[in-house]
Length: 388
Image 1: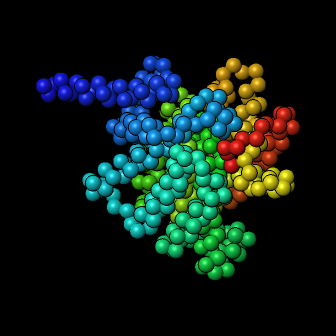
Image 2 (image 1 turned 90 degrees about the vertical axis):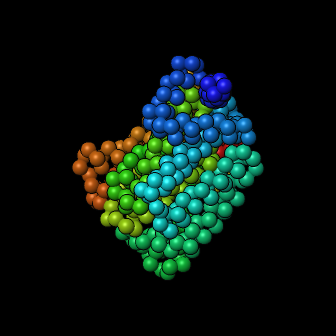
Image 3 (image 1 turned 90 degrees about the horizontal axis):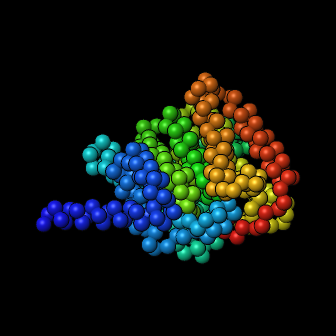
């Protein structure tokens, strides 16, 4: 009887995992490859995280074909659940073993990320929370975080106009920090429009930050890095597995708060930190400027983002839009965040060197010239009502 029950249990798990890969349109060889890579990268926790994500799909979270202006297939927006589930299991197991015990500040970081994730998941499932309202909620959460944990207030960063704000008063510095905490997750969500883009930027950023982060922050970064890699397996192989607002907000919140903590506790250059998350931040800043020039709301959606234009350029004459989609995401992730990681590890550019200011200037130049070139050679894309 025990053997029969065991066999039935394994059959149930197999059917459960197959239903997930069926939803993503994977062939048997691709499904075997995907599950094998997940097991290799994330172990049992990685497999369980993906099964939890499969279960959550029964509650909704289906993505429209043209939700991001790039995807040409129906997909799921709940991929962020896999990252968060892996992170919770990883940190929970470490805490159970007694090898990790987060302090008060780390708990506030986690709570803030969880709150941002909850806002995103609500939007993924319900789809009725406007971008303006989401940003307002995040700003309030950021203010609450700063109030409860003043140690997270950004300290002077050797940029004159920023330091002028930070040195005005603790209240003004706290408000500025809260705006930054709310801005970066929105930037990540805005950039979440191509396979591997935001998860790739996050992976490169976390790899770089791990080399300089204080010991208290390392477990978060390591767990989230592995979670991102687990997510990327199904994202890149299927092309139907997206972070959604929940995943993008969570990664953006963790990245943003990590930048604040590392800036406050180490001697690294703020320009090096900015270079790691350059693309999401630059793309949202330019979008706000572009909309202001056109007298549109900063929350108004459009499809004139750099990744939208690059995808349209690469997709001309291609039979597979998924290939263009993936090339777009990986190229941007490697070009902006990957290059910063490579230079800091292999080119002997220390994270505290002044050369990073010029590198960020170069990234702005590359972004601006690239956007202008692509925009001049492509017809205006239709407005996308689902993307900020």
